[in-house]
Image 1 (cartoon, one colour):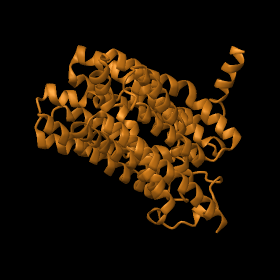
Image 2 (image 1 turned 135 degrees about the horizontal axis):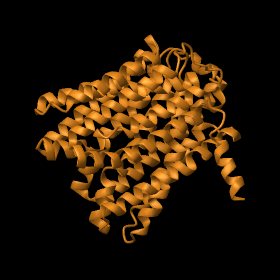
Image 3 (image 1 turned 30 degrees about the horizontal axis):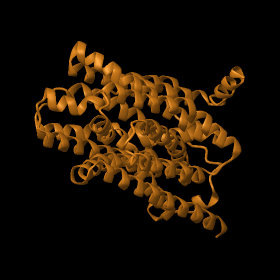
Length: 405
């Protein structure tokens, strides 16, 4: 019985092209080496002695650079091809990281972080477009999930390694290792993967091909709003929730870490089998996203029960299931929605919705908590999650009307 279950799990990792596995490998190397980000606010406060207000502005510059980079990366992917954008982005940001550590004044660092993130996040939409080119049409969502798995594993390893590097080499060691990982990963990609000029889009709906511009695609813009909201409430996991664990229930950093680990383990164990099962059954992506967005909203409804610490575990399981049902299929929906030659623009806007959510999530969450308390914040997050679910239902009905017309 156990052997059969294991074989079923392994089968979900079969059928990928060589290029997809190389993309997964370089994503893992890159994300495992992304050590500056988890410690950035700590570095700015403790090492450079900036005020909380200054740290906040540097993080805003960081987020704005991320948004601009996402847009440029998508637009350039359509103009000159994803391959050149990926190589330029990772190599240049890798070299830039070596120099950013020597910038210590406030305004210069704001500008440096903005430029660095503009270059670095050009990679994300280009990488999504590359998956559309190198993956087979029948397993494109699974390919996206495989890369997400590499991202999660990399992020799980990165902070632990980063802590050891800080202890041994100081914060400057993070910049050297992070920069080197960018250059190493893209060098592997350039050596082992050849540029592919044209993506495969045989599975796209004909109606999507009739759309002249992403800015006139109303369905996609409503979908982007759904992506923004689900990302915004998910990011509470890394901003307000760890503080809530300690202030309300007295959890230690280690106990909060265990809850985060539970999220990572659930993603690792369940995401790929879930995506594989849904693909085999041919379940429409939008239906799965509807369920996922509601489950994510429900996890914050559970947090309103604030008299028992065990509810934190149940809520974490729910938000993890919501993540599994929402994010991989959102990636797949955005890519499948894009007409020929506009994949970059579509994936740029999709990644920008996450960058914007990252900026807004902590700001809105902490403002609500400061003025009204944690319970109001959980209620607000649950409400906008339910609203996003209804928006998703509208998208589903609009897709049906689009096919009929």
